[in-house]
Amino acid sequence: MIILSDEDLIWTELTNRLDELGSQYGCSFVALPIANRGIATPDDELARICRQEGAAALLTANYKDFAAKLVYYQALLSAGVSAIVLRQPNPRIDDPDIDYQLALVEPHLQRIVRQLERTGEPLLFIINKSGLRIRRLQDLIDQLST
Amino acid sequence: MSERRGALIALGEGAYTVPEIARILQPNMTVDRIRYWLHKGLLGEPLRWGSAGRPHLLSFEQLLRVRTIQDLREKLKFPLQKVTPVVEELSDVVFFDKDWHELRFFPTPKNEVGVSDGDRYYEVKTHQLMIPEAVLPELESIVRGARRDWARGEVGIQDYERLVSNPRIVAGSPTIKGTRVETSFVAYLVQALGVERVLELYPHLDRDAVLQAANFEGIEPPAA
Image 1: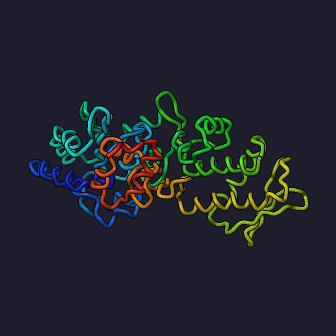
Image 2: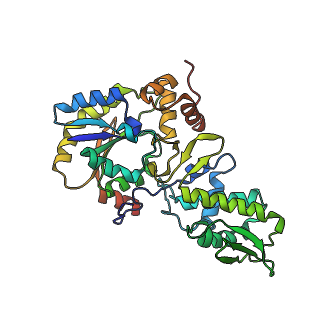
Image 3: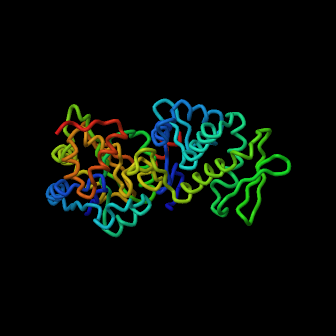
């Protein structure tokens, strides 16, 4: 299984270390291809790129306005793209460098891989220091439309 | 464009909160002003009305409407009451219809304002708003600006030439031009890790773009 890092988390060392971590669960991490960096790849191209790369999910980060961003994640899921969102810490408390991102993913990666293998629908995985939450597209639509 | 399937927006469409539009249209736009215009009906129905803990969500077209109203108010001194019907008419007919070509405004014999693109003609009902002939070139320029940004699907951010909002990129969140990297995330990393580390993480970004993102988000880079 392949997980594709969006341009916000294409950090080479992070991708390499996530890839190492994922190998024990049959999961590879791949950064957004170089051809799609620095050209502002549109959101609606992401589904095609994920298919082209054979990616089961998109890895991205969120620091601000999570409530507003849910609409964007809902749109990703509607287009058939599962997303893994790493919510970022308060920079005064934690340093959000590579070790922090790895520590966010590590405890949950096995469960994420299993869910992605089993599911027939796109899912949103939200990870923060408190843990992992998994949301279905319909959950998001219900939440946004009520 | 993706299938919507009952969802609020499809991938490739933008969704903006009121504070985000105020930030994009800085320095003269305020959250209160946009909320007032929204509740007065000047911007049309939002994508979603907010409630406690859930922000109002507006479209890219509404972002351009906000900027147009702001320009009409500030540059042409149009009174708000009378801006409303004019903006509604222009929005529905010529701002966002790509079939219209380059627009020209001119006074009509009835003292209304005519709009033509050479092929077609439309008379704007100004509802007693007297638009002096002298301001028509400026009106033309404001409308052209809105149409240009609508057609290219992107707005620049004043004083930050490396930053843009494009509804197709991370749903319109301000980004470094030519990338999918949000200004808020870059600024956050600058605050936490410093500029040099951010440049290591994103070798395709340059210092000027990173500093503009930090500055736009109100972050002072820590001393090296």
